[in-house]
Image 1 (cartoon, rainbow, N blue to C red):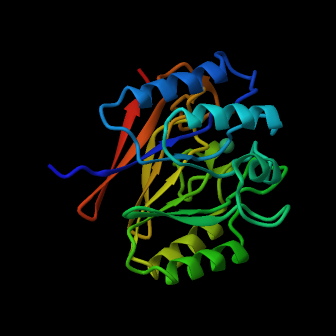
Image 2 (image 1 turned 90 degrees about the vertical axis):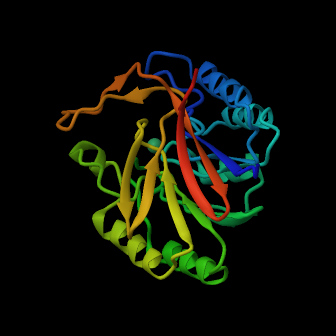
Amino acid sequence: MARPFLLVQLSDPHIGATWADGDPVAGLRAAVESVRRLPDAPDAVLMSGDLADNAADAEYELVHELLGQLGAPAYVLPGNHDDRDALRRNFELPGAVGTPVQYAVELGPLRLVVLDSTRPGEDRGELDADRLSWLDAELTGAPDRVTLIALHHPPVSTGIAAWDELGLPATDRRALGAVLDRHPQVRRVVAGHMHRTMTAELAGRAVLVVPSTYIQTRLNFNPQEIETVAEPPGFAVHALLDGELASHVQPVT
Ligand SMILES: [Fe+2]
């Protein structure tokens, strides 16, 4: 039987955080152990932002060490709690100091394109014209590669006004959608930030938001403020078989 190519996506470990019940280090360790117990080892690993809560080198070193236990190449991107340059330093990422962390990598049959959706110093995100023209050029250069785009902020409305205020402006989401319209090889867009599982659509492509390994947020469509809740953490396993991409969400057990 043919074996799929497997990309595991973990998100939002928030190492160093103390603002919710639970230990973020224990949470990430449990998620890593859960991945290690899967019958099928991942071919690559993605961490979709908020690796560190305080952007301290020691926090990034710990994430680096724990991801290293998965025995597959690991790719990271910045969330609103991260510092671009600390992330670059600790994970040897390309790009000049202070600039958005964006790169593309060929993972066997799958191409991963990482976008930086952060607005330094703020929790909400942005995708400016420079970042999107970089994306357009990257996608133009590889029109036949099955591609997954990863970023921290979900590029869709969540249906929850409190979350959308912390997300990407509608104009930026539409601008990303306009780029995707030109590039049918993009099969999936994946994000974190919400600490929940959610799916939506952008330019006809499925968008998947994956849980945190630290703490989840309550499903409440009219919250005065976003609440955390002790629900199971989880991660995604993106499986590419014969050119078709399926995304599974697995609770941490
Ligand atoms: Fe976030």
